[in-house]
Length: 150
Image 1 (tube, rainbow, N blue to C red):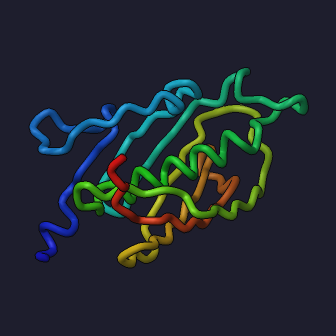
Image 2 (image 1 turned 90 degrees about the horizontal axis):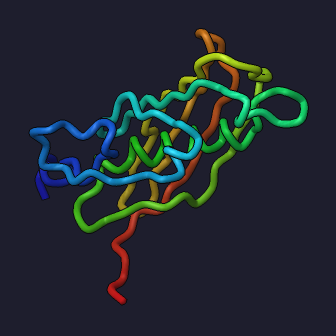
């Protein structure tokens, strides 16, 4: 298999799918629910963001940890998908996240890079910033597989 075949983009999220792309757009209802935006997507790289609003806050008036986790998880999948070959898909195996600072508002930006990609498992890292300040960092492993028919 050539490098072009192995790393040709298979799917992109509809927000970043170029109009002249051979990639098929993928809908993401959960991202829409939390107003998550996919700003960049490429093989092994993604940038996602959201503006922290009232709906994202916990009772302590800071962004719920699950919001940051969702941004990292989606960022990792977004970075990994363009490295897959049809009909492969990926699924989260596990993610470890460290929270460094509370986030009470502002634009939360998640930058993800592919650390290592094997045949069946990939490792990715996400760094989350608000106004250039690192607020969380995550590392995750993803299964790469072809779904069974039926």
